[in-house]
Length: 299
Ligand SMILES: NC(=O)c1ccc[n+]([C@@H]2O[C@H](COP(=O)([O-])OP(=O)(O)OC[C@H]3O[C@@H](n4cnc5c(N)ncnc54)[C@H](OP(=O)(O)O)[C@@H]3O)[C@@H](O)[C@H]2O)c1
Image (cartoon, rainbow, N blue to C red):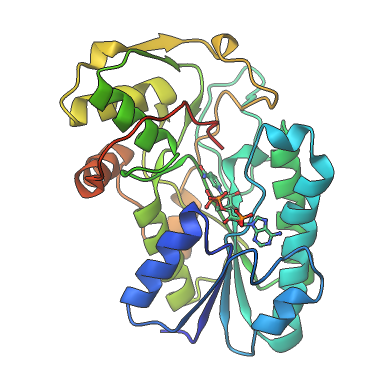
């Protein structure tokens, strides 16, 4: 096992689960939220990072729609911040794992059949969020070529959060009818499985500049929602398919952004289980008392 793990953005969806799983595995963890370490402050990361640390940057501006009207803030957090972190790691000799997104792709296959994106497929982000996350990947790898960027997608929990699956669970418990987009295809990824992959990267030092860590298979949001309803014993017919045009949002989403884990597996990363199995495990593990929720904005 590697040395101390410093987690940035530790108060977020991913950072919280990573900090818990890393600590329960016996690792020394320094979990820093934005109040303890603001990565946009050029001097902040180096105050917390020491030689030999494994740093995992989970900090990001993730409000995909708000980013369209706050591009400077999104760029500061998603590009300048990761650059500051990478510089601090390079300065002291720390390892860096930086988390990125499927939204670096546009889902336009120019008339060819869509297929899960490989690591070196051309990136063409559609939104401010996607563009700033891509700029963050580039900044990290230019400051610290030994860093590893781990792209993931459609992260879900099974509990009482604000992610897509949590909200669908609450809707299902209420017996609510929901209209869910059927023309956005991606790779749903359970946060617990993603964390397992991140810890494997940290522990084994898989040497690849970019990895993809999605659960296996592809799904539309509609399929994912229907599966949640089925898993909790609600009527799946209450989930109705609609087109993206029925839910217009400020930031365009790629119609297809599934990630291929093939090259990551070749690099040594254990493939994550199929998303349906992960979703069943997540819903089983969830168990929190459902409360009311609104449709999430699906980063
Ligand atoms: N969620 C998804 O479906 C999804 C999909 C693909 C990729 N990703 C990527 O996965 C990573 C984790 O995302 P997540 O879902 O865990 O997001 P999240 O829940 O929004 O967490 C992001 C965290 O970053 C922190 N943060 C924001 N600005 C910061 C700053 N200047 N300095 C330090 N911390 C700052 C936030 O803290 P405050 O709340 O205190 O500001 C928040 O706790 C991100 O890189 C994201 O792009 C997520």
